[in-house]
Structure formats: C-alpha cells, structure tokens
Length: 247
Image 1: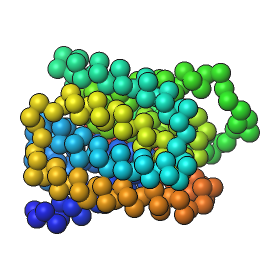
Image 2: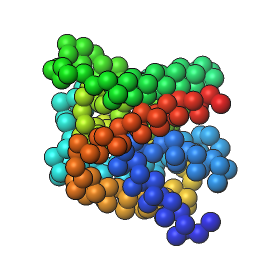
Image 3: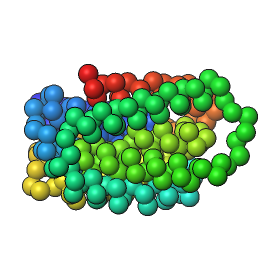
C-alpha cells in the first residue's frame, strides 16, 4: 500500500474520530491488524503513536472554538491517568478474555443509557450530586482501556459526557481534550520499540490533517441539529463496539 493511500486512510479516520469524540484507537487497531497484519503489541503502540498528535491538534482547534468544558474534562483526566498507569502495569497479568467481556458489557450498557436518555429526555437538567462521581468513573474506565489494551478509551469518555447532559458538539470537544492526556500516558507505556514507523508516520500525517479540518467543520454546525442526528447514531455505535468486542 502506497504512502499516499496511508495518508488518505489516516485523514479519513482523523476526520471521523475528531468529529465524533473518539480517539480512533479501535479504528486504527482494526486497520493495522487487518490490512497490515501487525501483531497486537505493535498495532497497539503504532495506534497510540498515530492518534496522539492528531488529538493534540484537534484539541487545540476545539479550544479555539470554545467548545471544551474543562471542569468535567479535568476531573476525567485526573481519574483516567492513574488508571492508565495501573492498567499498563497490570496488562501482562490480566486475561484478555476477562478484560474484553467487562469493557464490552460496560459499553453496551452505556450505549443503551444514551439511547434511552435521547428517546426519553429528562426535563431536569440541573447538576446532580453524583455527576462528579460519574465523571470520575468514566475516566477510570477509559484509562484502563488505554493502559491494558492500547485503545484510545474514547467510548466511555464520550458516553459519560453525553450522560452528563453535554450536547454532542461540546462532548466531542471535551472528549478529545481528555484523550490527549490518556493517550500520552498510554503511548509512553506501550512504546518498547514496538512502533512500525513507516506505517505509523504516514497514517499520522493524514490523521493530523483530518484533525485540523474537524473542529472547523463542527464550529459551523447547529449544535441542536447535530445533537438530534448524531447522538442516537453514537449510542448505536457504542453498543455495536461493545458487541463487536465479544463476537
């Protein structure tokens, strides 16, 4: 596969994930393992290497548009980073099947909750006394996903932000901000000389270009309409991600 093809693939993934609040870990892992047949450790390290710069660029773009909600984002980061470190240290000792089933079940439940919340919206939008605890919990789950498997952990973060009543535009922006911190720690622990540089750099270039474009696109959309159309789709996607992990 040519370098141009790799850049195009990276661009499409970068544009997609920075527009929908993910880090692209699952997509990058899928591409690296299915198309390039990289081993698990190499794919995980290359995935994080590819995603991290685009997350930084995308977060800067979201910051400029004023859509990042730092209070809840910082709480998630504070919870996620220690979980990422712990997950990275424990990953050699955790049976993959157990980890996979736990995360899959969590994602399915979160996706269903988001869908129910969308269909039956609560009239009470006031801050709940449990919101801080929820943000912490979602941060921990995300951190474990990054640390154990080299995924970006975007699913729980986005799901948590939506359940905390952020609209899609601000949830996407805040999720990208949180994932910068978790991906940085995950990349450090998953390096170990495992990166496939030729593939990773080409994908990274495309992903950065996509990350530059995504925040500008989101800044031009109507948040209410975007929330109406994309939120149910994201709930279905999160459920699908969970089911896909166990079949």
